[in-house]
Length: 249
Image (tube, rainbow, N blue to C red; front, top):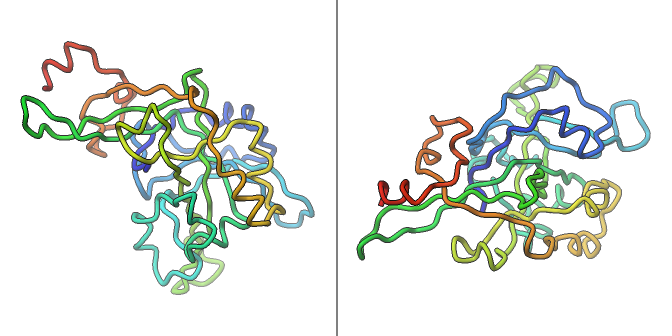
């Protein structure tokens, strides 16, 4: 699964790496090394702009935790941060977004927790940070959705909420000892097809739900400070040393 991630890239760099054509500099969020459910996050998506006729690649800020268009309230967003790749095409909450509203979430990496044991007893959970081995951004496959607050007039600035979820798949061998699932990430060669809103054939879309071959990722243990959303600093992704391990465990 994916319950926290780090996102510190400058929007200008995301624009360049992902070939973004439209971005409003006013829609900028601060770097975060501890993005939690319902937090804002950058997303790359292809969408026909108002008054346009063809999709344009855009950089947008979305809320993490998908709220289906038919939901009565946004309260369930915190429970919908992940969507399983094997059922995303059929689950009522995700199938419409899977058909035409797919996005990429460019992140530095994500955190995963593994149960730890010390001296034969439970010693809490050890967090790990997973990132690309080459140091590039990790492009997580995501879905996005629009939700309207019917209690507000349609022209109210808070009437619409745009939210997203991360698609997950079975963990590759490197990560399986930590957790059985991982976010589905894509290589650049798959970006265009995944983002294409005109591609709505379920069979073709499901064929895209294949992660790159093993070997692209790096994983290392990090400190327990990431467990608190109050902590947000670059040091959260720092690899634990042997001395740190001795002190902690």
